[in-house]
Length: 165
Image 1 (cartoon, helix red, strand yellow):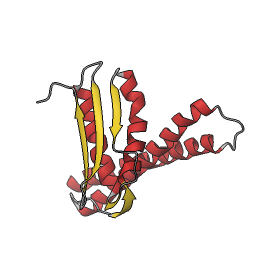
Image 2 (cartoon, helix red, strand yellow):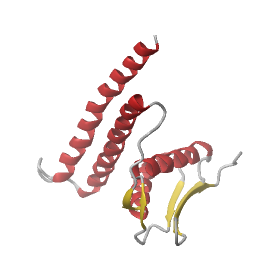
Image 3 (cartoon, rainbow, N blue to C red):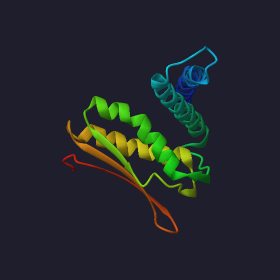
Image 4 (tube, one colour):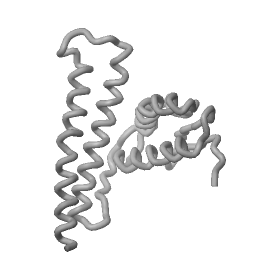
């Protein structure tokens, strides 16, 4: 029975990958201008959709990796820019913040913060923290994402005006 359950899980994840790839790729086509002129005020939404599509495809790949590795996810540390990643994530979350009437701010993302880290894992953690802030912060509240260079390491924090635990 466990083998059958794992097989069904693997099939479901594989079936999710293709639509996610299509969403990612179509958003890229919309932004590229291949289909003709595109209003600049709409471009941002498709750029966000494309980035989110990349994230989704990566997460689906992680699920597939997990199915072959037990509970461990692969860790792929590479030189990347935490400030740019934080800007991208905060930009993509702004629409949801507006829907909930939250003020969302990024502090410390102006300067490049190069460091070696696993982008997919840090992205996942950041989105989880922001998602929790959105869930538990009432309308009119504030969510602050902050990235800081502490010399030998970088710090990422998400704070909000919610009640807390």
